[in-house]
View 1 (cartoon, rainbow, N blue to C red):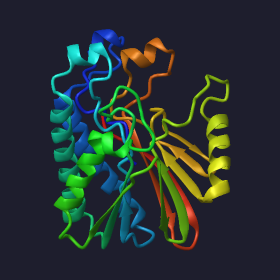
View 2: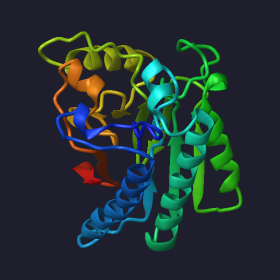
View 3: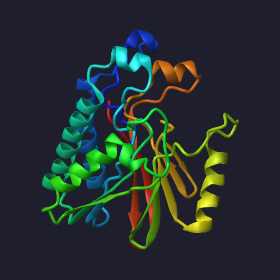
Length: 265
């Protein structure tokens, strides 16, 4: 799961009690580490079974954008420059998997997030057409168009569905789900959201990001983030979480088996 990278964001240690530091150089370091460590996990799984396919979910908020005054004041890159750096990191990562992963096929489902928008507020009908990230996905799709081992599936809507080894998977960024601040955290509103979605198209598992807290539930996975603790998050009282992304293993006979974080620091 690749979500909430927030390329271009700057986190100064003094603003987060020295819990974190983040800039463009650290972004690229964590990007390289993510794909290397993900493949290490795959090799461990291969000690007991064959792994021939990988799904790499690009799930939005991959750039930080200029949504608030402090972002404009502190960031090193403009939104368009952030997209360029983000695309470079994705290409390096996918090329690494292609060169070293021994995969017959890599499928890349893509959903846009709320940070990559070009509008003041998120829109619905044309959210994809007003997204820097959706534009980047189109560019990546063209980049790999002649590589038979890579298939991009780019969503023009909020939600994307894909069949993998007999399982129907649902992908979305997650900003449509309202946290609500309840004691149960995201669990209750997410369960309600999935129930409503299943009325239309039922999914065996739902993957999303947005909430920066790696959590595995029954039938759903919320991804962590690369950016780690921020001044904004600490101000709102969110518990600081180390930079990490999630990975799940799906077996053709047994369904989902292993869930593990991929650490990037």
